[in-house]
Image (cartoon, rainbow, N blue to C red; front, side, top):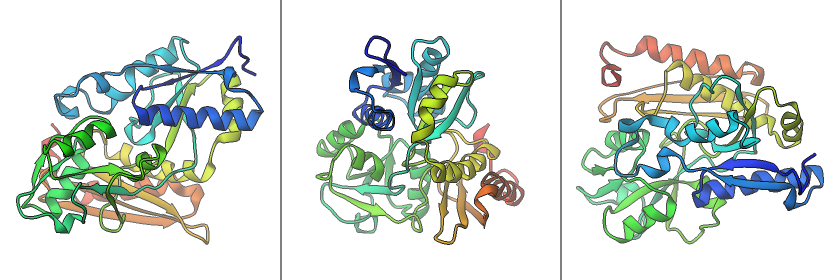
Length: 312
């Protein structure tokens, strides 16, 4: 067990949301094992994604920008585990690392945020919507081709400041992030997944560790949420088969129904919103990965010639 003299080192990015997620992980471990806070150390690690804010993610390396430096510290033993937003995680981990612990999933919905209130449909023609997410931008272009879409990076606080400065009329945030930050004052309208599918893994905290570290594996076991893991097995397999990255507009959501059935919906879009293909499936939770794989393969089979040319 970790002690104040040899604390468990939790690696994280330094944004307010990342720290909130690291502290939630620490608090759950404290409760599960009856440990005091001094038995844990939260280690803040700066990532390229945090430092490079003046260019779109697709131009500077995609999802790995938010994980690479943290994973390097995990591999070299400077930290014992890493806490991530699962939606930021590549589908494949570096050799020697595993992402196999997930906390109970929060609200999966996107939040439409505008200082003037209202919904996406209420925006006037030509209004500016800011987002760094290629998925959200493609979905907006599909639904409201009359809007002007602009790059909009930074943490929640930075994005809210950009709205106040008039950089854009509206933006999108994750409901889960707002909830974890206790930001009930942010004017937002939740977007139902039936209207706009979220990112794969949205709302889920994932914990990465060294594959050969049995001590950390055993410490994490009591806080692992199996239903969340089942849903993510479907979604992340879907993403992996489609070769998803920050350059790929992909959305997907797996849900467990009251009778124990796993239901999945997914979509792929052209970045300009000119085309979208949708698929899904359902079945037993133990078949989660195969449900996601089959839906992805059907989309690949249905995609017209040239659909993915923009990825090259």
